[in-house]
Length: 137
Image (cartoon, rainbow, N blue to C red):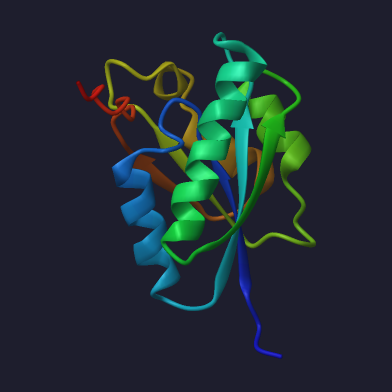
């Protein structure tokens, strides 16, 4: 059996963004990888986070990526990342945020804080919030 890298992906408002999908597809081209998706339940609540997570997982699987996921039990992304990170089962972390000036996660310096907390390689992806498809009519 070939060795497979495992990556923890942390995103919320950008979970089903085109930029994150492209970044994960690019990462998958470098070798076998499985993604564990984590969406912390932020200010929008569990229902909104669940909808984003489900949409992201559908898109990623449709693109041929191996992905599983869950909601972070804590709305604080640092706490959620700390609780989800398993150095015995995961190799790297991918954090996806909104752009500077809009991202509350960047105001917290989330990618660097997670890197220090976990001592894992962290890749930061900047993305726009996915927009709902226009209604046809």
